[in-house]
Image 1 (spheres, rainbow over the protein chains, first blue to last red):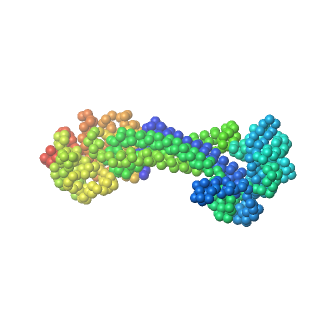
Image 2 (tube, each protein chain N blue to C red):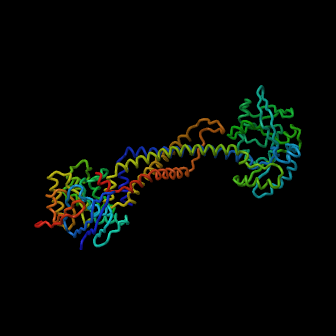
Amino acid sequence: MNHVLFVALRMLFQRKRQTLVSVLGVSMGVSAFVVMSSLMLGFQNYFIQQVIDLEPHIKIKPKIEKSTQEPYTILLGEQPEEKDRILGWQDIMENLEKHQEVLGVAPRLVSKGITKYGVRDKPVTLLGIDPKREPKASIIDRFLVNKNLQRLETNRTGVIVGALVARSLGIDQLGKKLLLVAPNGQSLLVTVEDFFESGITNIDDARVYINIKTLQSLLERQGEVNEIVLKIRDVNRAERLSREFQAFVSYEVESWQRAYRNFLSIFKIQNTITYMIVFAILTVSAFGIFNIIMMTVLEKKRDIAILMAMGYSRKDVLLIFMMEGFVIGFMGALIGSLVGFGLQEYLESIRLDVEGLIRTRGFVLDRDPMLYVYALFFSMFFALMASLYPSYRASRLNPVDIFRSQ
Amino acid sequence: MSLIELKGIKKWVGQEQILKGIDFTVQKGEFVAVVGASGSGKSSLLYIMGLLDKPSEGDVFFEGEKVDFSNERGLSELRNKKIGFVFQFHYLLPEFNLLENVMLPAIKLGMKREEAMERAYELLKSLGLEGKEKRRIYQISGGEMQRVAIARALINNPSIILADEPTGNLDSKNTQIVMEIFKEINKGGATFVMVTHELHLAEQAQRVVEIKDGMVLSDKVIQGV
């Protein structure tokens, strides 16, 4: 192997410019992979983590989808629409609490409503929660600016307003009074007890938390709930557990994965697009490597012939050129990783307000070291694949034909 | 014992028959010149003797053993350990300096780099290239390049050195220098087979084999050499 390395390295480093171009091509692909994956996964993981912490892992709610295509609906007509409530919710909760995988269960009453503050108004989702039980089923506390969840218990007309709702209404202080208007036309003057800031735009821009009893009273639905929310030990088992619970609950049981399936699908598409771009960059760099090694093989036919005359075998020749591809891939991965690391550091240091699907101060990056391992693997794979054919061509040259042609 | 023995060697390239049944033996320590006109088949014969090409028909025996041309690895090993080549063109690798060019076969053989370097130094010194070891090939003359190629052929102490028109590109002064080197090495016990079309050079060998139209026309021992 010593002789292969000796020849390969020397051939490679004597053509500094071409080698540098190849290495830069690979390093561009690697750094693009590291940075783009880091940004994309950082954003996705942040979103998913916030959703997991904030939202119930499993939600039980009345079935609202009607199927008019079922044969019995055609024959017998549509079933009466199910009312937006869960009957026997206390029993359901009691049963679910006994399950060893369930950490906490809480009831909710959810309704649309309008908030009015001065001349401004904004449609919102009103979430009636039990302030004592809710923290067992979601990590709501973490997202409260002033950690005043229990104020909903002491002040029944207190509300916790989403940060973007507050911004839309022009509220920036606690204690402000705003008017809640329910769909039944009833209204209630409430006091802002806290702000709720999850970083997820569509949540912060829509939610108002209120004591469940107050909301029941406002909606004239005393004792009713229309959601039971659960927190479980292992979030990844939510879908499986939801199917298990569905067997004994007649209402719809929905895991967080299903509730956010649109986002998760978008993430999959996003990942596919990103990896396709990286694949394209690496493919271009692979063609660069292919081109350079192929050119070397064609230029060095005479040298290959003399190496064979000296006793270098076809396998040695194959390995010499494969080694060149390997070295280009490895150096490209090394430089690309360093550049990627530098770019990650730079992006992490930028403090700008990012506002889109999520709101953060600066970029959220995934700094998983495995990204570098994958980058190394992919770049080596592409480099070796690119050098395979030229190396094979080199190893199949007939030295006698070359000597004769001189 | 003969070093190389060729029995009934025939070679076709496409439709053309280049060698038409050659029987030829080289004894250890001999200096054989193979002469013939251009296209007579002398280089093809040399490539077969050097195990770079395989005959269409016939057998090659190396140190008494029949050569298996289907065993490419075995052929490479034999070439590396037992055969040294010198060509009309030096075929030095431009990426390497003179010393490294000479070291290449030794490193393939598995010799340690320091040992190969030491041996390459000695060879270059003995061929009058002391002090030029680190030079690149474009920094030396054609005669010097050919001497480096000879050093490269010698580094693994081969049983035989095959030279294909080794002076074809040299002026008369360098030609004589190279011939003197060959004779000197031959005196040390090395076996030489040199292909040339120049009779005055062939006459400096111990034996001259003339090839014509792919056949051995004559095989003479030169008296008084």
